[in-house]
Length: 201
Image (tube, rainbow, N blue to C red; front, side, top):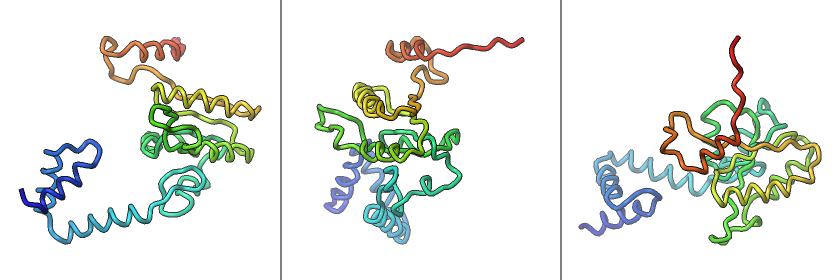
């Protein structure tokens, strides 16, 4: 294999979810692209890596110090949704059902990986609530051992805010999932978070 091709495949292979065969296919596709398109791609990646920053208010990715969501006066500043990563924020935004603001932790507490509360943006979250504008905090963290640990820690931190409403996203069975293939923990959460069905008259 060409040394140049091997280098490109090696770099692409470092991306999450990209195996060596996929990396080779991507490299061959890049080779077929117009030089101008490849130049635009590399410039875009370079600009993104060097110029992107985290929003000073919520931790979202932004081109400036304050992200578009935090700067939008139409958003509901009394509601704050706490998420692990920017990707989670993007997933919620895709639903177009939430119009509040966010707080991105940057991960979850994981002693096995050496990640403690001090490694997350928990202080940023608490400082924002202390300003007095937030009335509800929605904790939207994945249902995992680390997620539950983080949830427990956050609940303890938020106890001091007397009039603050704290909610979590509902856990349970996804739309279209077959019950027999769902794990016990998910079914348990679905039962715990069951809601009453109003009968039509």
